[in-house]
Image (cartoon, rainbow, N blue to C red):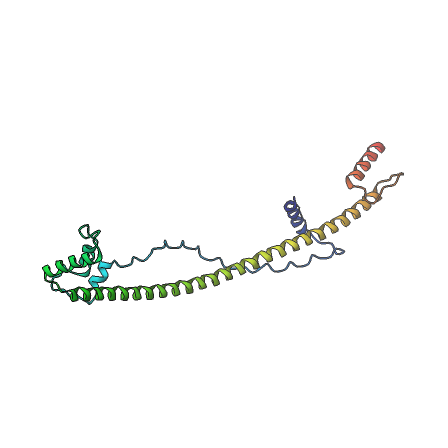
Length: 226
């Protein structure tokens, strides 16, 4: 209903304005139109970095196997310690069994321990490298999030401004329509008073009588006098 009344007021407003009517105040400039952002591309599917396996770390490590027999490493000893053959033995018995196996294979215990140190060092260095990569990744993502947050706040501020401007435009349109309704009421009273002067009525007519009622009375009197 309100929209239809606004359309009527717009049509009437295109007509001529009488000299005794105040001219409508020029409408305020519309709110600034902010350029629409490009359609946001969907965020790429997150992919977790694949961390290197222990075998890759050992293979890329500059330290080589310290034992004379390549297959006898600290990892081989670890498999032997956890094998079913040594399961359930006391620490002393397990130690004796390992020493016998290493001696039979011609492998020195010192070489096995050196291999263990090298592998531990390789794992620690790899961890330091992965930690450094993680810290750089976090710093990059935090900077990106800060940038996105700033852009989001700018966009939200623009839309809040547009919403506020839209509310102000509604208020101006309502005020203009209320002003038009007041002028319309005065115009109808002026027309009714003029129409009342054209119709003779002993009972008297109020200046607020409808034009339709006055015209019906006038036509009826004309027919009676014809």
